[in-house]
Length: 89
Image (cartoon, rainbow, N blue to C red):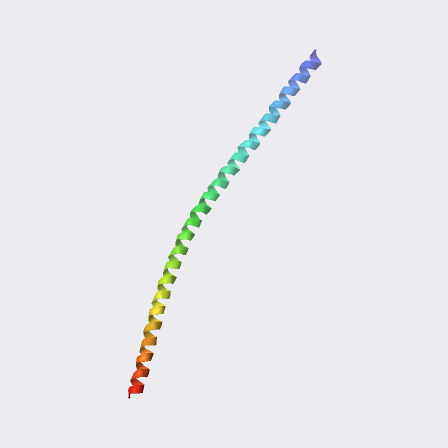
């Protein structure tokens, strides 16, 4: 009877130790998941910021392209005008 009691107690202690180990691992895993979630959220915010910056850069490049096209057109017109003036003279 005493042997069974000792086995039962040691089994209970073993199960309790197993539960405590599992619980500790769960807490650590939960903490790691929380840290990773925060990192992902920060990266998402940075990505949004970079996307907005890229859109601004694209808009600026489009404006510059338009202005350069206008300048090129004006230069072409001036050159044509200069040629016509030379031919008339």
